[in-house]
Image 1 (spheres, rainbow, N blue to C red):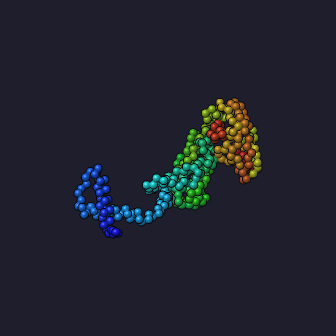
Image 2 (image 1 turned 90 degrees about the vertical axis):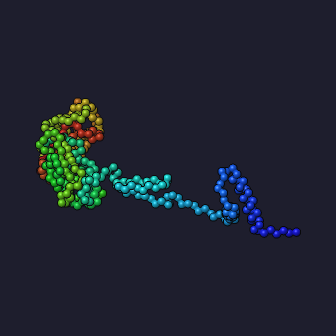
Image 3 (image 1 turned 180 degrees about the vertical axis):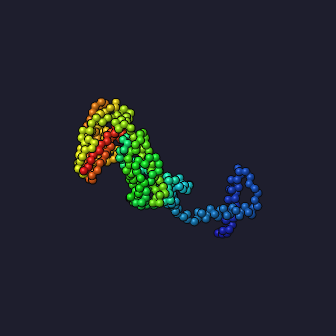
Length: 342
């Protein structure tokens, strides 16, 4: 005989069986608040139907989660603003953009005037407070960066700021310098009739005379006695003789000549072959420096020569030189001479 069972009866039987199992599981736990039987049956049935539906319905495929870097846009720090804090372990803050120069350059906004600003880069000439004889001519050159946002016209000025003028006057730079570019700015000067360390300070200014940028300085050491020497530790030197081209020698415009000095090592240290004689003031005559080319022990002499070219116009021209170590530390006597071009 066939027996037909109603599906609802089977479901209720299954529900009751499950209730018994669940009740057994709750024996070891702390007693829960009393719930009405009809509410309990309804909750149990809902729980069974939920798990049955989870086994019947296919589980959707998992969609890959995009990487963190694709969800978070890159952040470019802006000077003066802090980058936002992001709660992502893999994200690192980018370094601020570097200034175009390879060297570390610090721009001082307090020296600006409107969109005009400047930053000192280096002393191109007269770097080490060199020795000068009063009345010597020399050229001071600074390398300057246009660190503002406005281009400089030819009428940007370099104006006197303090100290001794060294015979120079305020003048225009006479060159265009775009924002972010560097330029060499020079002044022709004359050592004053003084002794000791003397300073002259200058500053850039707009076309209307408004100063901007840092104060630019030049310091020279003036000797009362032109034959005096300046020792640098155990290094010292003295001029023995102008072997060629003594002061006042006449040459023709544009003529080539060789200047030779005889010098003595008056210090207590040996000069290496990489020591040099270097230009420190006035005319270069086409050369900046030359190696001495041989070691010179204390007390010994050496003749040092440089090939030079006279200016192309008539006049009286002087030039000042001094010995320097291989790392450009000046020492010893100043060797100055002049020529008459006619």
